[in-house]
Image: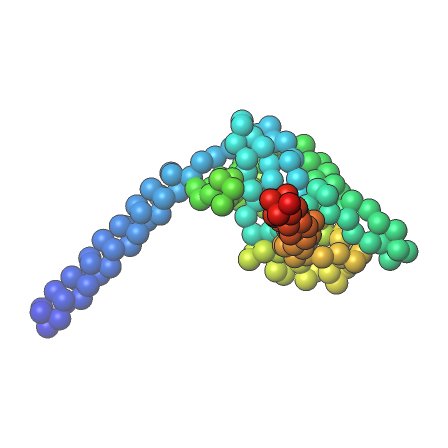
Length: 190
C-alpha cells in the first residue's frame, strides 16, 4: 500500500509543479505585451494611434476610409468614414487599455482593447461598424440579424474591397507597361 501512496503523491507533486510552471510561463508571456491607455486617435475603423504607435484591433476588419457602401434607397455613403467615427466616439469616452505583443505585415501592433468587461472589438462588430475576422463571429451574426451599421447596406467585405482596389490599380497602370515599350521600340526603328 505504501508504494501506491508514494506513486500517487509523486504524481500529485509532479502535476502541481507542471501547473506552476505553466502559470509562470503565462505570466511571463503577459509581461511581454505592450500596453497603452490612451489617449487614442482613430486612424480608420480598425486602427488606433497612441503615443506614436499604430495599433491594429485584432479579430475584426472595418471598411477602409475610401470605401463606399450603398443604402437601401440606392444612395452611396462613406461607410469607411462612418466606421472611423464610431471607433473615435467609443475611445473618446476613455478608460480603455489596449495590449498586444504581435505585429501585422504593416508593423502595426495587434491589440485587444478592454475597459472593465467591455471589449472594443466586440462593441465595433456588434454595432455593425466592422465585420468579424477570426473573432466576434457571434456579434457579427447578431448585427446582421438586427440590420445594424453596414448590414443595413450593400457592401463588399473590406478584404475583398482592398483586393479589388489592387486589381484596379494594376489595370490602370497596365496601359503604361503596354504602350511605353512599343513607343520606345518605334523610336529606334526609324
